[in-house]
Image (cartoon, rainbow, N blue to C red; front, side, top):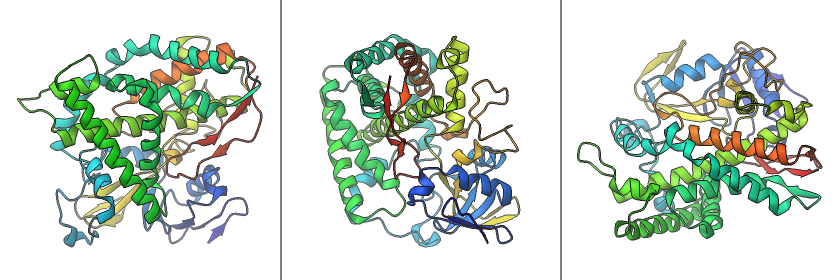
Length: 416
């Protein structure tokens, strides 16, 4: 068993097992020490804290995201009794209902129909129309704090942009942004390792209130259709089929929760990476092409989502490892992005690299529907930020949230 004096983990190379507490601050503050050792010893391993196999290599993660023998949903091909899945918790019924038709949690044919109904709003040409609005919003936020000496960039800049953009896309009044954030933060805590019943009940209450609000807004839109995503989801049809109320609510909640949380994390992570890299930001945003390359490297270097789980949909063998139907696997997106087999100097932030790629948005049918929007938000917001505040610097050690497998900063104190 290989123990590290730096990070709280232990790896057994021969048995292909690893122990690492996801709630330990030394781990979630810098998981890359663990990932480096995993790559050197056993890129596929049983993570004992989670109780399932995990895959850290770029090749495996990329392949398993596309492997149709695995899926995000299991009860469409098996009963709970058949695979030993526990009964639903009575005190999370509203949360479970909100997740029931999440694009992240369903498989074809449901997934195909729902994604087709929503996808048009997120194609690149539609998203590109938002560029002036994102630029205006970024400047507006900076105008609000530019006269100060120090701010928390997460609260002042990274968090407001995506929530305002997605709220305006959905047709939600901007003054509801704070409430949307509150619901989102409370629901996302359900994905924490070692969650408590208190967290579950609070997330359930947030899901109940969030769903009620979305359905109330949808009812108003039926009599007053507008050029917004709620109206689009009410009227979109594929072969005569429309979204049900439950499907509409699940989709709207997913777009806010997943789109907002990931973009906030990635924006904060990117600013931290740039400021710690030693590169002159003026060279990183000198052209549209270099801006895009900088954002892609930020996505690779410090991703906002580090684990994506899937179920085995049948008894199968992958890379010599047998899996039973219903078993869970963990795909380690953050680790795959630092795979030394795939990337030269993987632990170096290099926005000029020529081997850039990442799996931060996933792959296959569950590739992030909001990826074009997230990329645009980051390209525009980061460029404006560093053009307006070229002397931006860290004023305190950045603090990561205890939310693995999400990976993002709780605070990012900066001055200029």
